[in-house]
Amino acid sequence: MRVTSYTILEDLHLAEETATAAALSERLNDGKPRWIDIVSPLDDELRTLLIPLVHDDSIVENFILMDRNLPVAHSEKELYFEFPIIRDMVSFDLENISFLCMPHLLITIHDNEIESLNKLSQDLCKHLHLQRATIASLLFNLMAELVEKNYFLYRDQREKITKLSNKVIKGQNSIDVRTILHLKKNIGRINIMIEDQLYCINTIQIYEGVAFDIGKQRRNFNNLEDEVRNGFRFLSRYENRLEDIHKHYELMLQEKTNNRLKVLTIVAAIFLPLNLVAGIYGMNFEYIPTLEWAFGYHAAIALMLIVSASMVYYFYRRGWFK
Image (cartoon, rainbow, N blue to C red; front, side, top):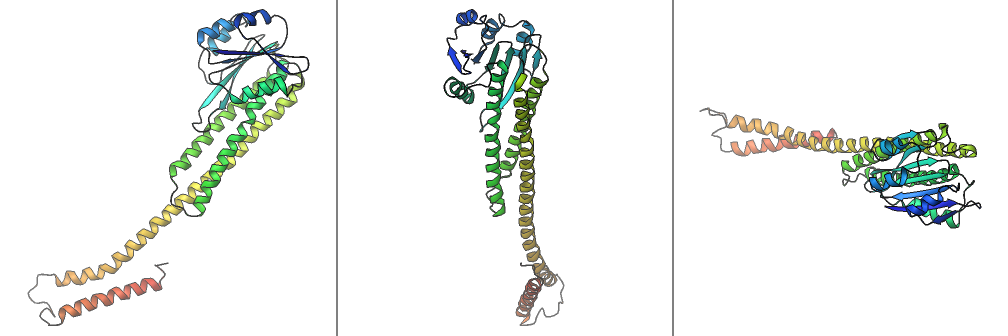
């Protein structure tokens, strides 16, 4: 388990602190607003660290330490929720970041290092600053940083769909329908993620308690909600484009199949009368006209060639070869 502690200074910057359990327990009663970031914790480690901090132990036992689908819990002085992100744009696995809000403390818990959070914490220590020295302001900055990464997901899917569309328009045969289905699956996962993100943001906006005072940050959270909702419009357009590409690709395959069937139909139609002639002269009758004629074989071959040429010319005139 890695624990990093930050305190919010009066100049609205963050300052990193020594984050041992003993040092934290001594400082948490000084009333300063803090952010504690916990990475890759074990259950026993979390229980030992959090139980002394929370007023309602059930939040730790029944929510933080249990795997659930987007749990939200609150008590008189705590608000807990899990904010989903897609950390890897290759595997597109969903990962939840747990947020535990208390009057002067914000705790984030996640299984893996989140590069964007690490970068934001360093920027807040050096270059950036919060709007206010409050937990609500810090919470907004963290969530805004995570939501901003959604744009990279949208852009990545848009570029892949555009490349796929260009291939289909050019009639390239190297397209695998599994690529289309894979993109549809990824867009579906992004949809699930932003639905849950929106749920978390709405939970914060309607929360009434002393865990934190949203105060003047309400407008910022409203803007954050609008930004997340925009994702639905983006993804809806991408899904429509994928559906059009899929239909166009199926039409291309159908046209190719029809062309092959057309060739087979023409060949079968040409050989049909030839098989008729061959079948007649293959009958086991004793007396067949022209059977003993010296030029009968040549005449039959000539008849077959004439019939074949006539049918080819007929199909050509009718536009079957176009």
